[in-house]
Amino acid sequence: MSSDDASSSRGTQAPGPSANPLPSIDTLFHLERIPNQLTLLCLYMPLGVVLGFLRVFICFHTFLVTLLLPKTSVIRCYIVRAMCTILGLVVIEEEKNRDPEVKVFVANHVSIVDHWMLDLLQPCVLPSVWDIPCVLNWGHIYKSFSSPQEPNVVSLKSFIQSQQNVTLLGFPEAAISNGTALMRFTQTWPFELDVPVQAVAIKASRSSPFRDLSIATLDSSWFADLVWLLFCPWTTFHICRLPAVSRGREETVEEFSQRVAEMLAAQLGVRATPYTKAEKQELVKRLHRERLQVHRRSQEANARSNLYLVHMANQVKEVLPDVPLHVIMQDLQETNSVDSTISRIIDGVVSYIPEKRPTVEARGEPSNQTMPIQELLKTAKDVQVTFNTSASSFGSTAQERFQSYHERKTRLIENARMKYIQKHGIKI
Ligand SMILES: *[C@@H]1O[C@H](CO)[C@@H](O)[C@H](O)[C@H]1NC(C)=O
Ligand SMILES: *[C@@H]1O[C@H](CO)[C@@H](O)[C@H](O)[C@H]1NC(C)=O
Ligand SMILES: *[C@@H]1O[C@H](CO)[C@@H](O)[C@H](O)[C@H]1NC(C)=O
Ligand SMILES: *[C@@H]1O[C@H](CO)[C@@H](O)[C@H](O)[C@H]1NC(C)=O
Image (cartoon, rainbow, N blue to C red; front, side, top):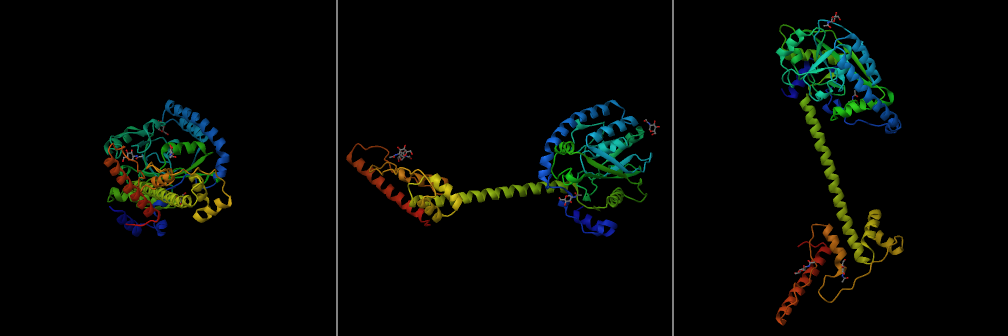
C-alpha cells in the first residue's frame, strides 16, 4: 500500500486533530540534538559530566536489583522506580485505567527507555528487539519469540496464558519519533492475539533550560541517547493508559490497528500519519546523501578559488619576480586582487626578504627563473609543460652534437611558445 493511498483513506475517515494538514515526514524527528542555548549547556557541562558518571554506577546497581528481585514483585517496582528517579528518569502516571484482564499494551515510541518506564508501572515483556542490544536486557524486558522482526503469534498466545501478572508490550510504530505525530502501525502482532489491547500514550519532556535538548534525534544511536539521558538533570515521562479495546467480530487486523492508532493519536493530541519505519530510514539516507553533496560542493568551490589564487599569484610574480611566492599568496588571500597586492608590495606595506634572482645560464640547463611558474603550473594540474631542454648525453661526433643542439633549440622554442600561450590563456 503506497503512502498516498494510506493518507487519502486516513484523510476521509479520521476525525478530530486530522482536520489540520498532514505534517511532512521530517517534522516528526529532531534533526539536531542541541538547537540553541549552547552557552547554558557549556556552563552545565562539568556538573552534567559528574552526574553522568555517578549515574553510570547507580545504573549498574539498578540492573543488579532488577536481576535479584522477582519481576512481578511490588517491592521491586518501588525500589527500581526510586532508583530511576535518581537516574533522572521520572515517571508520572496520569491515567491508571488498571485492568487485570489486559494482557497486551501498545504504546507510541518516543525514547529508548519507554519500555523500562512502562515496566515500572506494570511488569511487561517486549517481544522482538529492533535497535537495542540484548546486553541491555534490563529487568528481563525483552524476550525473543522466534523471528525478531515479526514474533510468532502462537508462541505469544501461549506466553500470555502461562504468565499471570506480566503483560506483553508492543511498539507498533517500530521506530522512535519526537511526538509531533504518530507513525503508521507496521507491527501487527498485538492486534492478532484476540485479547483486549490497551493503548498507552507516552509523552517525554525535559524541563526549562533543557527543553530544546532532544531526547532522540533522527539518526542517533541508543548509546548516545542513553548518555544524554544520564547527563540531563531529569527527563519526565507522562504515561497515560487508555481504556482497553477489543477487536470487533467483523473487524480485520488492519482496521483494528488503525482504530487503536486513531485513539492513541487523539489522546496525544496529534495526527496519525501514514509514514512508516521504512520511510524514516529512507529519510535518514536522503539527508545523509544531501549532506555529502553539500560537503563535496564546498570542497570543489575551495579548489576552484585556490586555482584562481595561484593564477593571480603568477601574475604578481611576473611583475615582481623578487618577491617570494608565499608572501604573494598570503597577501592575495587578504586583498583578493592583483593590483592592490602589487601596490601594497611596492608601497612597502608587505615586508619580505627578496629572493635572489638566478642568472640564466647559456648552457641549456634548466633555468631557475622558470621554477616558480613551473611550481604554479604543477598545482594547476591541467597544464603540463616541461621546461627541460637539457641534452640526454654529450655526443661524441660533431654531427651528433649538432643534431642535439638542433633538438634542444626546437624544444626551447616550443617551450617558449607554450609558456606564451599559457600566460595569455590562448586556446588552440
Ligand atoms: C519535532 O522535530 C521538529 C523538527 O524536526 C520540530 O519542528 C518539532 O517541534 C518537534 N516536535 C516536538 C514535539 O518537539
Ligand atoms: C498477580 O497479582 C495478584 C494481585 O496483584 C496477586 O494476588 C498474585 O499473587 C500475582 N501473581 C503472581 C504469580 O505474582
Ligand atoms: C636551481 O634550483 C635548484 C633547487 O631549487 C638548485 O639545486 C640549483 O642549484 C639551482 N640552479 C641554478 C643554476 O641556480
Ligand atoms: C630532461 O631530459 C633529458 C633527456 O631528454 C633527461 O635525461 C632528463 O632526466 C630530463 N630532466 C628532467 C628534470 O626531467
